[in-house]
Image 1 (cartoon, rainbow, N blue to C red):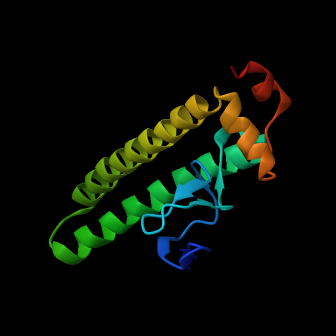
Image 2: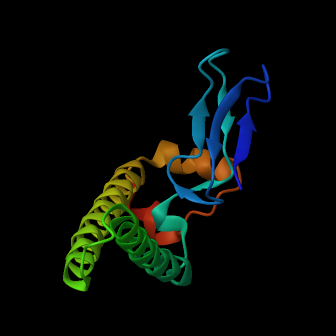
Length: 142
């Protein structure tokens, strides 16, 4: 189910999102009125607990498996004369490709989150808007 996020100042549509939680900065600038909007669905990697991190990684793997099954179904429909080996090879290649993309996008989000965590000003802003910042992260910030 997609959610629509609006700017509280000018009611401009900011974005649509299918996920409830995304790893990103919660501070978004409205392109129309240029005001800063706080997106509560965004979380920083360092603020997530270990169970959420593990669940996110497992869910990422499940999405990759489901995507490869979708590719296998496409092979069966598109090429009815294809045997099981072609379908297995297609599933394997798509599984590797989808997993590689998922891992790449997750590591990119984690790197950006770690970079933002180095700024004490940014962490103070998160705390001001009631986002959780671990004490060990706050102490390391410059």
